[in-house]
Length: 264
Picture 1: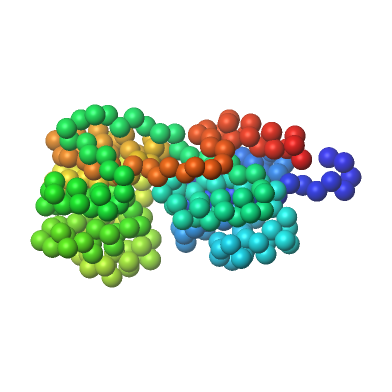
Picture 2: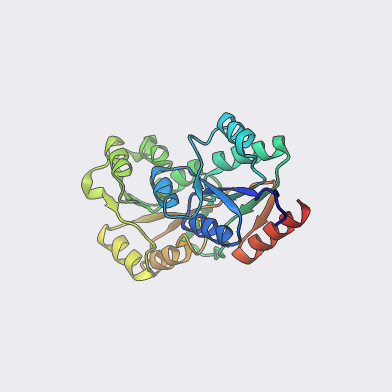
C-alpha cells in the first residue's frame, strides 16, 4: 500500500453464521470491515468477529451518517435470505450512493417433486396451506412472522409448536403471542435428520413448515426427516432479489472483492 492510501472500508450486513465467517475472512485479507447485525443474537455473534461494529441502528439516515464519516467503499449483504426489508434498505442505499453491492446467499438446494412437499411463495400462502394440511403445525421457521400464523383465524383449534433460538427475548415473544411453554422448543441448530425426526415424532407433528434456507439452514435434513415419517412439508420459498452481484460461496465472494480492489 502506498503511503497515505486509505484502507477500503467494507460494510458487511451479517445475520447468519456465514456472515460472521465472511467478516473474519475479509479481515484476514487486510480489509477494514464494519459489521452490521439485525438482531440481538446477530449483534452477539458480531462481537466474536474481527470487524468493527456498525454504530447505532441500521437505517438509511444512519447509514448516510456513517458513510459521510468513514466512507464505505463496498457493501457485502450476508443477511438471512428472508431478511428482505434489510436487503431492500441496503440495496437502495447502495444505488443512491453508487456503491458496489455484493449479495452472499446460501447455496440453494433442490426441492424435489413429491406429493408431501408443498412449496409456497409467501408466508400468507404458507399459513393457509399448513392449516389445511394438519392440526398440529410444527414451525421450524424461527421467531419472525410467528404473528402471521398465530393471528390467523384458522389457527383456532390448532396446536402450533415452534422451534426458536434459546434467547430470552425470543422466548418472551413466543409467550406474549400466546404460546404455551410445552409448545416452545428453545434450541440452537443445526439439527441432524435424526434429531429433527425425533422432535417431529415427539410432538406429533401433522405438518412441518420450513424455509428454503439452503443446506446450511437445514432445509434438506428437515424435509428428509418429515418425509421419513410421512408428514407433509410446507416449504416457504426464498424471496428473489433483483439487484446486485450475487455469489453463493466464499471463493466467488473473494473474487468479487478482488475485482473491486482492482477498480479502486
